[in-house]
Image (tube, rainbow, N blue to C red):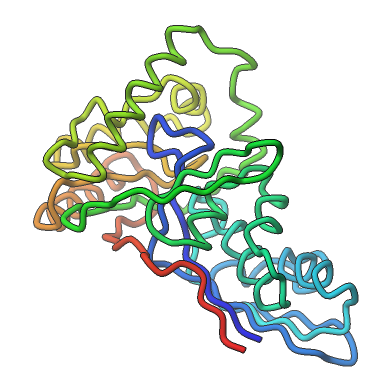
Length: 283
C-alpha cells in the first residue's frame, strides 16, 4: 500500500499547538510485506539511518505488529525546519501500513495534533487535544492568499525549541494571544480582513529567538516586502510570510532570498500553495 501526505506549517503566530496549515510539499511511503525489514529513503531525510530506528519503520511495524516489511520513503519535506516532516511521515507510514486512524497514530508520535491533522485533512485546521484525543475542525481559507517560506539550511530540533519555552506566561500575554488568534482566523478566511496584528505572538516566538537570532530581522524583511503576517513555521527554523494576494508572492520571495543573504543565513525562499486534499492512499 502507498500513501502520500503533505507538509504543514503550524502555530501561524498566535495559534500555538492548535493551528495547522497543509502545504504542497509531500512525503510518500510504500509498505509491502517482505521476508525481513528493509527501509529505503530518498530525497529529504535520506541521510537518516535506514533501519529499524527510522520513524517510518517504527510506525509501520507498530501498526502491522511485525517487522517483516519493505518500506520505501520519498520526501520533499525538509527535516527539522518546522514543516511537520515527522507528522507527515508518521501519517503516511501509518496509512501505508493499513492503520484505520493515521491521525491518532501520528498525534501520538508528535504529542500534539495540529501538524498531523493538517497532513490528514489538508487545508487550515485546528486540532486541540480534548481528553487526550485530537479534535479536528477545518476553517475557511481564502484562495487569494499567498504564502512564502524562508527555509534555512540549519535545523532546530523540536525538543530543543520546546525546552526554550517558559513554564508559565503572564495572564495578559495569554489574553493577547487569544485576541490575535481570532483576528488571524478571520483574516485567513477573508484576505481583506488580514492585518499585521493577527500574526503577533507572546507565547513562543520571543523565547525561541535566542536559538535563531536572525529570525526577527528576517521576519521584518518579509513584512517590509509585502507579507501582511510573518511568523515562525512551527518550531522553526523556517519562517512563513502570508500575503493578501498571490500577486505579492514573487516580490516577497525575492526579498526573502535577499534577506537571507544579507543575514548570512544559508537557505532558500520558496513560494508554496496550500494543500487542500490531505492524505491520499492507494491500495
